Amino acid sequence: MDRWYAPRHSIVELTPGEHTVTVRLDDDWGSVLMAPGASKTDTCQDAIDNADRVGFVLSSLSTGLGHGVYATGPARLTVLSFHVT
Image (cartoon, rainbow, N blue to C red):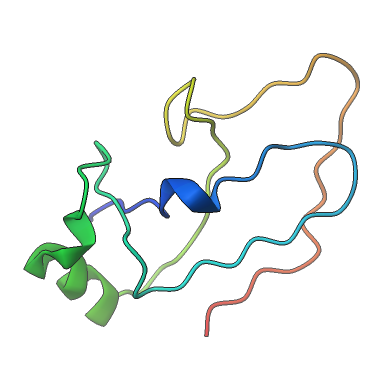
């Protein structure tokens, strides 16, 4: 199983309110270590072509991708929809 992360430009700072994030599969995804241009490799294309599971993680550039987020006060995250097309 490979882990691929959406491009840095798609990371949205969590602030009060509703947010929409859209990421294309043909965008410049990064490997688990965020190697630049990693999505141009055969490995990434193979992961896309043979994907049987897709998910998302919460993270920040400062804490490391996939390592979660924290709030400085009471907070709630509600995912209204998640689509892969």
